[in-house]
Image (tube, rainbow, N blue to C red; front, side):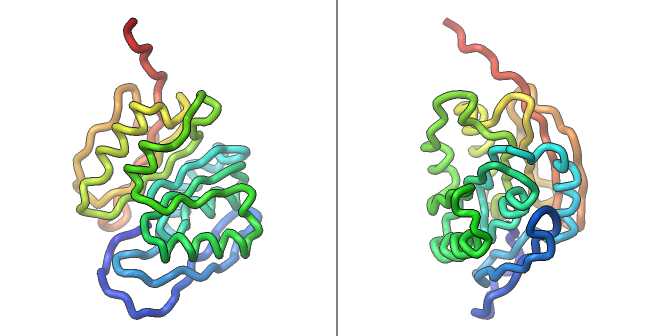
Amino acid sequence: MKKTSPRTNGKNGQIRIIGGRWRGRKLTVADLPGLRPTTDRVKETVFNWLQFELQQARVLDAFAGTGSLGLEALSRGAEQVIFIEKSAQAARQLQQNLAVLQAQANSHVITTDAIQALMNLQILSEQDAFDVIFLDPPFGQNLLQPCLQLIHERKLSKPGRFIYIETEKGLQYTTPPHWLLYREKQAGQVLSRLYITGEYEEEPL
């Protein structure tokens, strides 16, 4: 999701899937205030980083918006994508696009606040945790840090797997212990970083 202009013209827009089985497919997205899809330029960078990591992956798109990142992951072989989107209108449009792609069996849309959703996700074992997590929160709302804390505390990511974080340039945040910055790139005012998670420390008896 992106968070630039607060204006909307009331018309629908489009996103394009750039790789995988649905390569070139264009999908309708709602034109909502402060919402636009991740640019193809940034998306190409991210999925070049992840090109060998998505087959049969369990993926979480925590600030889904148009669903651009999660849909791209499905197109490139992810086994399941969980989308979290607070806007009911954006979530409905995302569900419609998943139906168009006949991808409902491999996806689930949760219409709620991302922090609340991260608190309530049912993670009963490491097998339920995610291989790839996308974190692309709205700019200027201080949502990233609590999400990072919840991911770590609730062990939402499998050890040695991937967390993609997209922020405005200059945003300061602290990652959990043993996360490794694997890739980094700036495009304009957008900073993209890919981390590899470490092993979780055992809780003291």
